[in-house]
Each structure stands twice: as C-alpha cells, then as structure tokens.
Image 1: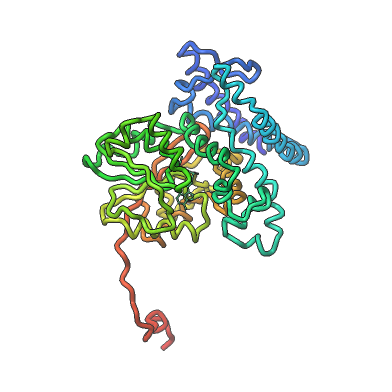
Image 2 (image 1 turned 30 degrees about the vertical axis):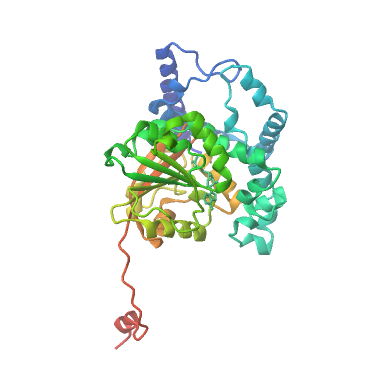
Length: 421
Ligand SMILES: C[S@@+](CC[C@H](N)C(=O)[O-])C[C@H]1O[C@@H](n2cnc3c(N)ncnc32)[C@H](O)[C@@H]1O
C-alpha cells in the first residue's frame, strides 16, 4: 500500500469521525463508546441520513487499513477466529441473556438483531463440506443447501421452520423480521417509494411479506391504499396477533388483508398497482426467482409496477461504464481509495449466508437485469434504501410487453444473413 493511499484512508476516517462527533456534540448527547457499556443507543442521531452515510465511510477504511498493514498470516488467523463471536452470541441466546437485558428496561443492544444467528452460523460451518460434495455442490435446490447438514433436515430452511417442535424458531424468525425495523430506514420505505402518488383504493401486494411488518408501516402512513400481505399459511396465527395488537382496525376495515399464499403458484390478484418484495428473492436461486417473477408478470397490467428491495453486490472493481445497468447504481460506488466491496460488509455476508441457508444469493445489478429481463420486466430505476447496518436498494420495474413468438423452425434467418456467399 502506498503512503498516499494510506493518508487518503486516514483522511476518510478523520472526516467521517468528525461528522459523527459533531452530530452528538450538537445534540448534547454522549458519544458512542465501546469502553462504556452503559452508553445508550440514540436512534435519533444514528439513523440521521448524514450519520448513516458517514458510518460505512468510517468503518470501511479502518478495515482496509487493518488488512493492508497486518502480516497476512496474522490477519487470516484473526479473521478465522471470528467464528468465536457467533459462538459466544449463541451461548448468550440459549442462556436467554438478551431477554434478561430486555426485561431490565435499559436501552441496550437490540436482541432481535442477533436472535436467528444460530441457524445461519451452523449452516455456514457446513458450507465447505457441501461445496466439496460432487452431488450437492452443483445443486441449486434449497433442500440441498448446507442447512440440510447443519440442522438435519431434508425440507430446506422454510420446511425446517414448519416442523413440529420448531414453533418457537418460526415465531422467532418472524419476530426478527419485525425487530429489524429500527435498523431499517423506515422513512425511506414509507417516504421514498412514492406510495402517495398512487390513486386512492390502489391495491398493493407484499409478496413473502412475513406477518406484515413493512405493510403495517406503509399502510399507517398511506391509509388511502388497500394493502395485501401474502406469506406461508403457517404464519397466519402470528400475523393475526400482530395486526390485532399493532393496528386493530386495519383488517376489519378492509384496508389491509393478510392472506396465505405460496408464491410458486399463480398470483391471485391481477392488475395490481404495485407488487412488492423485500428481502425475499435473495433466498432463492435463479431458477426459483424466475418462477416467482413469472407468476407476478402474468398477473401484471401494463401499468403495474414491481418494486423489490435487496442488497446490490458491488462490482469488484469500478462499475463497468459500458452498461446501461451502470446508470442504475451510484457512481462513484465508494470514495477512493476504498475497495468497492468496502472490505466485506453485510451484502457479502448475506450472500454467503443465503447460499448456506437456502442455496440463494445476493446479486449485482447486471445479474438482476438479466434475470428480471428473462421474466419479462425492465428495471427502470434504483433508489438507495440505506439501512443502519447495510445499504440496500429498491429496484423499480415495469412489465415489458410479451415478445412475439415465431412458431416456425423452417428457416434460420441468422444463418442465412451470415452465411458466406
Ligand atoms: C427473509 S423473509 C422476508 C420477510 C419480509 N418481506 C421482510 O422483509 O420482513 C422471507 C419470507 O418469505 C416467505 N416465504 C418463503 N417461502 C415462501 C413461499 N413459497 N410462498 C410465500 N412466502 C414464502 C417466508 O415465510 C418469509 O416470511
């Protein structure tokens, strides 16, 4: 590493630290401190867009410097030993430490953020064996993912959660999806997706919407919409409880409906204004994503929109300038001299986790463009949805008119055009 890039990294650290420090000074609040376990978390500061943007620009150069200046073998060893972190977290979970902290009433670490790490952690531990198994390594079936070996199930992760005796795990997973909300950018979900521009009574369907955490936020802020949440039937009882306590009139007034539906079957509601999916498609391999998207495409009216929120895996180097897809991602991707990957981060961690858990993956904009194109959609826009713990993007798609089919194999026109005279 050259002295100039080292000082550029230091400059990024200094500028971002100053931005964060000023925000706390300005509010007269104590600065976050790892050495003082009692410093509370102040979402009103940490979730400000300026601070959310400064945080990765502070953490990534720290990681990059650590990697650059360490002895490679020592850096690799330290990284390897990081498996002890989830191991320790698991002990805390099984010993119900978070529940104890929670009931103490202090504003501390949010338990829902860490609750479902044990299934992912065990699955990731089995990943290497699966990738060395000639049969399983090339399978994209969710039933053959590392989770099968880790948890001893033949039914894939979702099937495992349905098994008798796993009711608490299913409940915990769904609660975790709700618990992620304080770390997600609620303002962006409610404010940046232009729900207010839809005419009154427009129908929006959240596909794989869990018990309805996203829809509860959106429908409270935009009561002129009729929103439908669809997910697996096993979530019905928890969804009923969630709506009865969180927004008791939403269901009875008809503003919101929660419906059991398998997204591998045809979409029952046609010509809907918006079909919405958040963190669903990354659970699946390309073939499965195509099936889900094709069912949505078949239900679309020409003016329907498909919006989904996922991580975008950054290109390893700079975004290829020749792609129209490049116009859909922010440029420059990250400040120089940071690596585009920002030294890992949640998008990459999630990519590996999805492979281990379900043979799913996170994707680049190019991969999304090709998959959605095959399903009959065109990506129109992409808007950053900055979560506290990660940067995701919403992709906005419109249905393409079906392409005409040529049913004849009488002539191969391309051969004709290019055949030598
Ligand atoms: C990662 S969660 C995301 C939940 C929600 N969209 C959110 O962001 O909070 C994926 C969801 O897909 C649902 N799911 C899995 N397989 C499904 C299927 N075949 N049909 C409908 N939903 C399914 C799961 O039950 C789960 O709620």
